[in-house]
Length: 105
Image 1 (cartoon, rainbow, N blue to C red):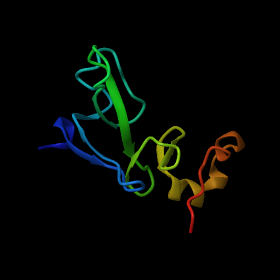
Image 2: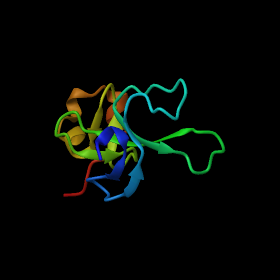
Image 3: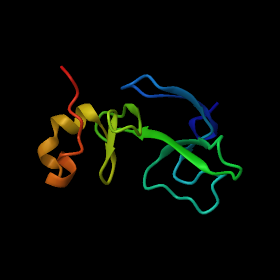
Image 4: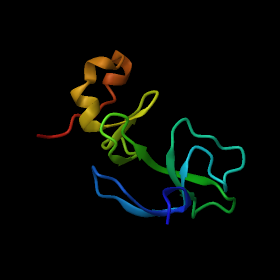
């Protein structure tokens, strides 16, 4: 099964593992929804509409798959895992730096 059509999403930071239905910017079940990044999505099981649920994306620097939780990744023009974000913290504006969760050694 290709990434675009579904499979298992697994965050490399927290090990969250859930099925996903689509990988890309325009989920076919989210009419008019366009993400700013290629995203792992699935239909929101708690919505009666076919609403896309954003699970996570891919770190721009290391290409690891990461979920959207603040303890795992940050989005600033692109998705960054917390490890790469903390190693490159000076590259982010001050208002974004305060949102980067520094991983424990």
